[in-house]
Image (cartoon, rainbow, N blue to C red):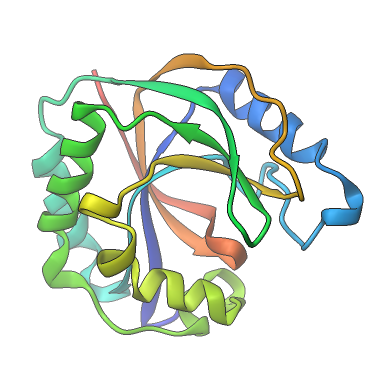
Length: 194
């Protein structure tokens, strides 16, 4: 294992929602494929935090997450449809509820001291694009707190796929080792909200 890990704290959807996201990802146009499809090794998720951390600090990181999640109830997650970036990344857009935003904020603050500078070696299999490294390195400054936009990344397409709004209960929070395209590749530890 590398000295550093690209870490994603995320909610993992229940099996039916995971299967739905995988189906939508698999149905994206082959002509738009850039290397990302959701499957059993590229897990659908809603990111709460992303950062580089020292592998030696994982026990302390998990201890902080224990504190933040203690007594926390399951989250109601509402998918509002699909969206696309100018760079052709498509996702299921997730409504930013008060509970989701508050959990994101608390985890960002609780894990602040563990942030390190990392590179490709911190990702699963040591594989990352420059864009992946930049995304994780800049997450706090460009994608958190007021810039937090929860979503489930699906892949790439020139147009967002059709996704009808739906709601689900998120009971699993996981610490995931990120891979190429900032996908959740390996669950390092998980917590169940009750």
